[in-house]
Image (cartoon, rainbow, N blue to C red; front, side, top):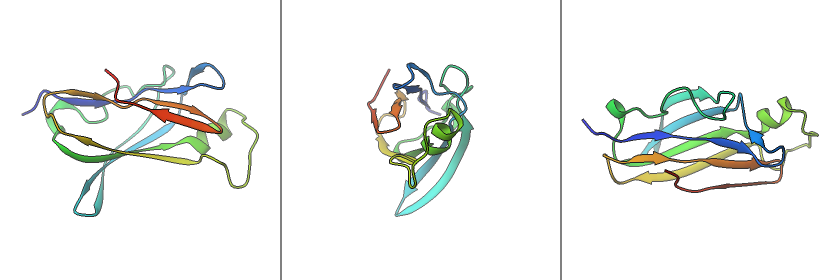
Length: 119
């Protein structure tokens, strides 16, 4: 069993606050196949209530976090576009150390986003 785990934190940079109630789905990518592992919603602090990938399921490999940015922007009253500039935001990344904490935050606004490997 590994000691690593995966978390996220979503911040709404346009409004200057955590992005609450934003849907997040985690997939594992293997040989071109995409397998859903977890589906969660961010809490009032913009985090999930538990690790997206807990220690007992954590393994090296390629993963994809998919953030439902468009639905969140609609819910907070951001003026809608058709289509939205940012709607579904996928972030594909690799986990190479099964004993590490991987934190993949998302900084989000209606017209921009960024991510990095956090701590």
